Structure formats: C-alpha cells, structure tokens
Length: 232
Image 1 (tube, rainbow, N blue to C red):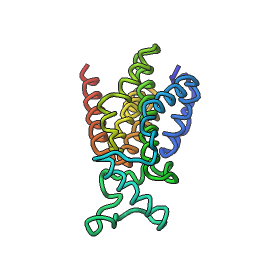
Image 2: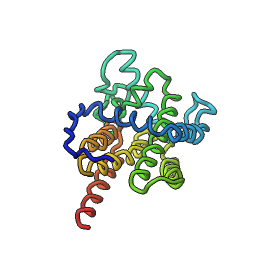
Image 3: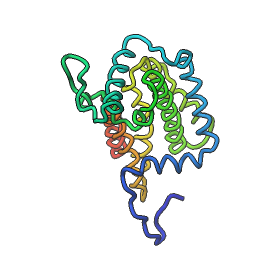
Image 4: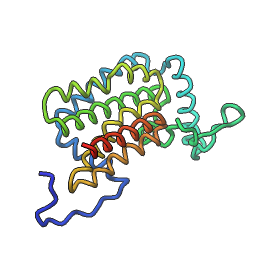
C-alpha cells in the first residue's frame, strides 16, 4: 500500500523545512481519536504544574527559568537574537550554550506567554509529542491494538522523564526520540526515503531544543539499530 512502483512517477521531494509539519499533519488527520486522547493524557499528566501556574519549583527549575527568561527578554524587549546572555558572570554564552532552547520551535511558539506558565506548557506539549510518537512507532512496527496506547503512556509518562520534568526543559527532547526512530525506520523501507527527512527533522529539533543528551542517545540508538539490522 505504500509502494511507489507500478510505473507511477515519484512526486518531487518536498522542502526539508516543511517535511516535519506536513508529515505530522497528515498523520493527525488519520488519528481522529488517538491524537485527542494523547492530548488529554498529556494535560492530565502535567496538570499538577498548573495548580499554581506562576510558581516555580526548586533546583533546575531556577536555572532553566533564568535561561528561558533571559532569551525571551532579548527577543521581545530588545528585538535581537540572544547571541549573548549578559545577566550572569559578566556575560556568557546565549544560543551557543548547548542547552539553550531559544531556537526551539516550541519555545518560539510559547514566547508570548510569561516564562513560568510557558515552561509548564512546554512540558505538556513535549509529553504530547512523546505519546503520539511512541504510538505511531509501535503501530507502524507491531500493528494495531491497545498495547500501542499502553506503550505510549509507559514511555512518555515514565518515571525517568517525569523526574527530569523538574524544570529540565532540555531533557524534554527525549520525547522526540520515537519520531526520530519512526522517520528513519520508515525511510528505510523501499520507496519511502523521504520519511528520513522526518527523522532528521526530529533530531534537528532536538539540537535546537538544547537536547544534548537526547541527541547523542538518538544517534547511538539509530546507528546501533541499523547495524544490527544489516547483520541479521
């Protein structure tokens, strides 16, 4: 059903910058029940954060709130790119900081919001993407069934990721790992190479979101998986 053979000419390759939103929009149309379900789960999972929307936690909350807000101030008040963070140590790295997420698509989407609720919304949206991505990955490789939803919740709402939601917005990039695997695995199928752009786009978003560790883990996971598949 996914074959491009039979004498049908292959469509022109879409621009790489548009592949990620177009592919996810197409999938969303086919998941009229699953996508709202995962949105509801993500809201329920992160709802305790919004009991006091303007309050922060402790520890890493303070650091990531600081970096988020300093970039936000540069973008909105001074109307410039946050190349530099002038607010600590006499000035330090801005977007060159490996954990900066000032170029993250979700960060830019939430930029109009105040920093504290924006960070919490960021955690909720990341959880939603993790739920949906895991569902698509399991559905594609193992078929339909309730276990796909169970697997999605087990990954995206796991204790490990939940613990890192203690303000560690950079670690939320792990929620994009299923999309990386989905894109590259589907792209490895005959005639489906364009889906590799989805995997690459998800990994690029990890980088833009300050996901140093998620990017490294994703690269190792994809490499090892394809090496093992080539040996089988």
